[in-house]
Length: 275
Picture (cartoon, rainbow, N blue to C red):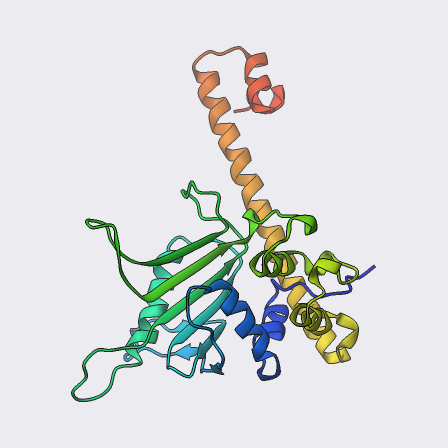
């Protein structure tokens, strides 16, 4: 049986929900939920999501969504499926392009408008000990323990860390994260999510509302998402097996009894003997 609602971690699903003019108020509600300390966003316009470098040697930055509010503040919203080696650095690089494009020819006082990067991540940062789903990063003065500037701000949502059940959803923030992570596994709208915006999200996400061409586009996007995850799982398990082989080889070289190596690595005697 096929899912009733689309997976929002697919390119099709993400753009369908957040990337269209008619659904712009849904994106605004989501951003206001994340940026609760900021004045409420009431207007957004979509910008060209492709920012070209000045020379052929410059890298080209492509965002999933690139928006601007009526104050000229920029919002980069992206979906990231897997960790890249320099993902944090890449997000800073992309944000710097949004600053650079605000430069005015001639005399300019450098009073650029704030740039916000929102990264919805289908993975967790390696080497980060905290358990929070959300990281909210601004420029910070370590010496005086004061915020230096919040005009360059990064919000990272590590979605695998979000494990609240429907019964535990209290805030709008909780409900948004639950919806993003679990909508494709639901068969109907739970009472906790029966709010005007969320009911519209379910309506937008319902596959039966799509044309045959749209369904095909979604199926292709879903296939890519599943193939990608299967590939990542294979790499993970291969890496884990390689690490076990390395441990077993070291234990074997140290003269540790074969039965003990089997016990602590889970490898078979045959696998260990052949190392």
